[in-house]
Image 1 (cartoon, rainbow, N blue to C red):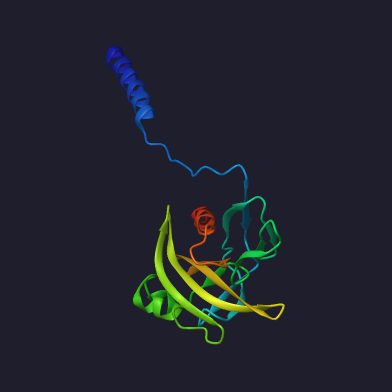
Image 2 (image 1 turned 180 degrees about the vertical axis):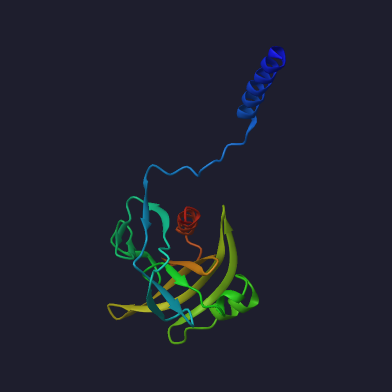
Length: 200
């Protein structure tokens, strides 16, 4: 009886050691040393009917998220400035979170219905160029690229806002970045930032 018990203990130790040596490790994305993390549970989140105007509602379920961004960017409320002091990104709406209505939640993200809603032109000096599904690492959603004209010192300036929508059940995270030229070298940084996003 003692012999069987001893063999069982040896077998358990060997199995445990083997499992420890072969079990897959959960790899977390490496945080860049020159980046910082922003984590928040906003007191208010937003609802929308047309994805252009938003209303504030209390964040009753304590939805929260985190995202990383370059250390030389400055965050003021919901707006990010680049090292030169120019606005380069923002949470839009300001909470970063849109609570979907039951009707909005019936559509699958990336479906024709959602793309049709997001592709409606703003009118005036703004125009939507594309709305398409994206996957960056483990983050999936829709990317909307627009063109808008602003006036600085009396001269028209063309900008290209790029909005990322990341859905999670009844809520969506939304963040907009800005570039002057389409597909500029900033796009790689924008995608890297979005790849760090997590709902908590």
